[in-house]
Length: 160
Ligand SMILES: O=C(O)CCC(=O)C(=O)O
Ligand SMILES: [Fe+2]
Image 1 (cartoon, helix red, strand yellow):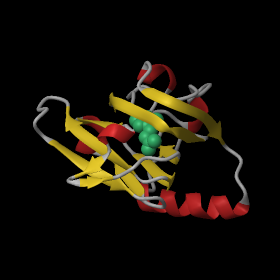
Image 2 (image 1 turned 135 degrees about the horizontal axis):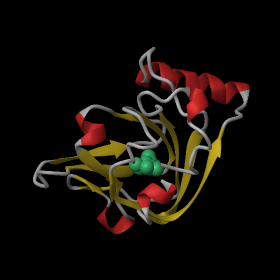
Image 3 (image 1 turned 60 degrees about the vertical axis):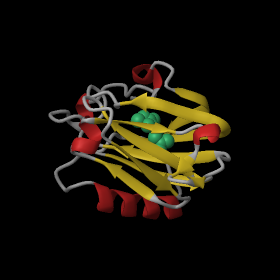
Image 4 (image 1 turned 30 degrees about the horizontal axis):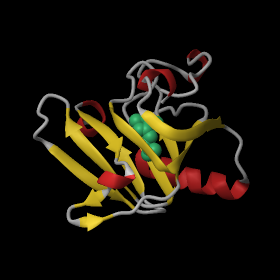
């Protein structure tokens, strides 16, 4: 996201959104109930990322300065493949097929020890299966870094 990603995302636009319709709020509440514990505080706004069909996200670990222990992402429109690669053991990796309407949750080792990336169209395979990429929108909720109260987050960065 933003500065922390230093150009990791290609072919995108993004926004931070804090006001939602009632229908969207109900969905976000389901996401939050599924992904976050009662002791976790979320960043005050939700990150919405709109990746064009040729857009992709290079491997990165979200900044621990701006993001806490949990990242939850709802994928919309096009399916895509997210690859996780261990930062110390590149031979240790896995891929997730992100179907539209699916939710992924990165926490624990997946959050801190593995990079995540969204494959570009030419490389978009889940095993043998080709997953053609179209426009993809993701709605990403993050917890605040530990020890940071909602009032202490200051001006949140446009992205992590
Ligand atoms: O689009 C996604 O689901 C992930 C985006 C991401 O990795 C990020 O913004 O840090
Ligand atoms: Fe990320």
